[in-house]
Structures are given as C-alpha cells and as structure tokens.
Length: 89
Length: 452
Image (tube, rainbow over the protein chains, first blue to last red):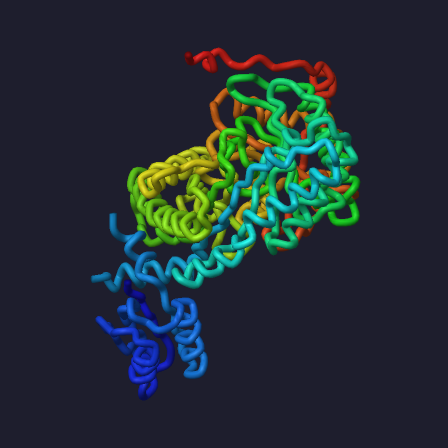
C-alpha cells in the first residue's frame, strides 16, 4: 500500500527534511522522490509505503496537510489506487 | 512505479479542471415499511433510512480523504412512495414527505429522491393520491425530490398524466412563489425513467432493485473541455477519441469510489453513472465543451451534432472503465446549473426549441429551465408531451424539469442558490395546445416497441 505526497510552494531551506521527518514520525517509508525547482517554485512528488504507518490514513493525510499550512506549502497526500485506476487498465 | 506525468495529470484534473465525484447515492427499498397505520408507516420509513444510511456521509468523507478527490453529494433514493402508500390518503403522503425530509436532515444529506409514481400506462389510486400531494409536499419540505414517469417506449404516453403534470408544476410553482418557485426544481417528469439513476431530482430506487444499493455519479465537464483545448486542431474523429480517453479516466475513478463505498458500507455496488453533470461554477460547463469543439456559442447551428458526438463518446469511453454502467450516463444540459448555457441564453444563441432538439441526443431532457410565471398549464403539459414523445420514439430517457417562476417574465433572472444555480427566464411559444392536451387518453407506443 502506497501513497503519493505532492508538495508545492515557494522554495525554502529544509522542505524535504520537514516532509521526510513527518513521514518518519508516522512510520511511512519513503520509496521515491522526484523533485524540481523552477525559478522560485518548489515541486516534489514523494511516494511512500504506508503499510506500516502507526495511525489511520486519514489522520496521516491531515497531519501532512497541516505541516504544509505551517510552512506555507501545499501538501496533498493521496492513496496510490486513484492513480492506478485512472492510468492503468 | 507510478509515472510522474500520470500523477500530475490526475492532480491537475482535480485542482484545476474541477473534476469530482458528483454523488454517492444509496438506494434503499422501503417495501417492507408498509403499514395501514400512518404513524407506524412513517416511523418505519424513518427508521429504515436512518439505519441503512447512517454511515453514508462519514464513509463519503473518508473516501474523499483517502483519494484526495472531492465527493460533492451524498444522497439517498427510495422506493417510489406511491408503491408503499397503499390506501392512505393525500394527508399521509404529505406526512411521508415530511418524514423523508427529517431523515435527510438527520443523515446530513442535501437531497432524498423517490417521492415518485410510475404511471406510464395508467394510475392506481395510490398514484393519484401521491401526485395530488406533490405540490404541497414540495412546498413544506426542503430536501425531498419528486418524480413521475409517464411514458415508456413499451407503454406509450399516458396523456392523462401529461395533462395532470402541467397542473402539478403550476401549483408547485405557486405554492413556492415566495422562494422563486423552487419547488419545481425538485420535481422532474420522465419518459423511460431509469431505476438506478443516482442524480437528483429524478433518483428513485426501482422495483427491480434489492434491499439497498450504492450508485455513483461521476462528473467532469471541465476535464473534458481542457482535454479538447489541449488537443488542438484535430478532426471530429480525433476529438471523439480525446473525449473517450478522458471519459475512461473519469469513470475509472467513479468505479474505484463506488467499489470502496460498497465495501465500507456493506451494501452491493449497483452502477456507475458516467454523466457529464455541470455546475454553475466557472469551468464546470457542458456548453463550454461544445464551444471548445468549435461553436461560437452553445445553441448555434451544429450544437446538436456536437452534442450527439459528445454524448456518444462519453459512453464509449466510460463503458469499459466500469463493470456496471447505468443510470442516465451521457451529457446533461441543464440551463441554470451551467454558466455556459446561461450565457448562451443571455446572448440569444440558445432557445427552448434548440434545447428540445438537443434533448434528442443528450442523456436526459429539458432541465432546469425557467419560463414565465404566466405560462398556462396546458403549454407546460405540451412541453412535457413533446419531450416524452422524443424519449418514447428514440428509446431513451427524456425528462422535463421546468420552472414557471411566479411573477417573472422573459428577461428576468431567477436565483435558486447552490448547485441549482440561477437562470434567465426563457421565452415560450404561446400558441395554445389546449385542445390536444384536454383529449387525454394514451398515446400509443411506437411500432418498434414490439421487439419480441
């Protein structure tokens, strides 16, 4: 079971560290990170394994979103099934 | 591993193109609620609905969070009430409507459908009582939706019902005159009504359905429009392919949500309705899709052809994406719920006659159209008869949801609020069809209904 975390916003020091730390806190294992900075705009897609997370997935989604708000970023966490359904037959 | 472009495409659809799941609708059978005691009957109805659907809203919210996709409405449809009303009189039917309204409020859902009667051949006494109660029921409740099916390809058109419906629409408009005749926005008259439609106001839980069922309605006019705009200069075959691909992706999400809702609630999955359902929000318009195909304004000559292609491509793309497709599935063309349609009416590009032509090829019919309040009931009946004839002959669902807004005339605006939107009052051909409507009887079914 995986989730996709997308992070967008103004570039800043320590974005990846903060998001990774939050994942670590809940026991979500990071599998892949794609990240780019276009001018001042930061965009990251992180794929994490949520099999072992210690909280309900909804709570994890809320915590990530809250972290985003605190740091002026938009952080969205979605279960991988929505992407698999839409793009794979 | 997931592809970055695919991830970004999905996120863009949701954030920028207003892609959403329009409704998770739980169908609930009320056949076992029957009682000869009015209080007992209402108590049974209330208890069954609030028990069966108690987790509907919370489940919808949980799925919304899991997949990051908005699920706009959670709703309930019930067995056509005329089938469970038995010998009860008009007063009891109004009491039932109030009970449904209460149940909807308890559950936290915005609409409950099924205050309905199926009279495509003739009326039962219960049907007559229910129909008589519709205007008052819609004026004293907030969330109850009502529908009447008065024609099928097999049975023909019940012209007595057609006459009656004109009067019901007029009376409903008058009883809710203080609220822009909003009662009529919750009442739809059908030909060939589907039994598993999850969309309001026409949803009801058909007699062939089980105890309860989960039906899901997807949406996404904005996604289709953007895909067409991005596709550039393709010929019409190319545009149809783009629409098919987009409809497939949209429907897959609908199927995912339907399956998950069904599992979580322990209720069988019924169908996914792959309708393009617009909302008054900017970017969520079917008219704008037609304009993106290459019409200056929706309603221009060519609109019917473009809509025919759109409606067909949506089905072809969607049908492979879901194990069961049903309901209305196609493209809705409501006026008040679609900013592009509203603009087209204001610009003089879209008229009632053109909309009628469009209903020959769209998924439903004349929807959310506001006409002058002084339109006679015979004219409303005749509009209904025309739509029913289109549905009957073409083997398709057609419907009329029309609002003769009391005190309003052509050029005025009527505001309903929320998903129901706002609409300009449209001109109606005022030559009288009264003599034909007064004839009543049954309009025979077409020869091609004899398919056995």
